[in-house]
Length: 129
Image (cartoon, rainbow, N blue to C red; front, side):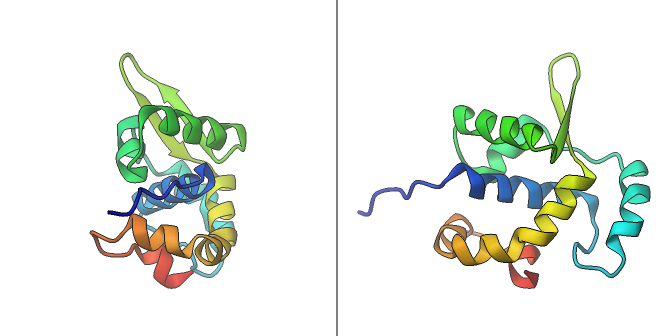
């Protein structure tokens, strides 16, 4: 039985950002997205929890925190802490980053992406990137 392939936290960041974009229910590659994005984000109330991110990246608590901390540090997400939970939302910078680099991630991490999604349908971002 092959050993589990270690995934770099950068690909986990990619998975998390794409999931957050998916929550926006927009076409990431639509024309004039940059001009529309402020209005989209201002009128959107979607978010993910830490548990949602953990489930999306299919990793442990430590890696989930590392990914979220990195995304916050890069300015790609914001965290709003409630009483017992966190609401993680994507920023304009995060949307534009993932739009620009999805093709790069797809090329560099192709095998890891296929492995990660082997038991479910490939997300639209992989197909369109």
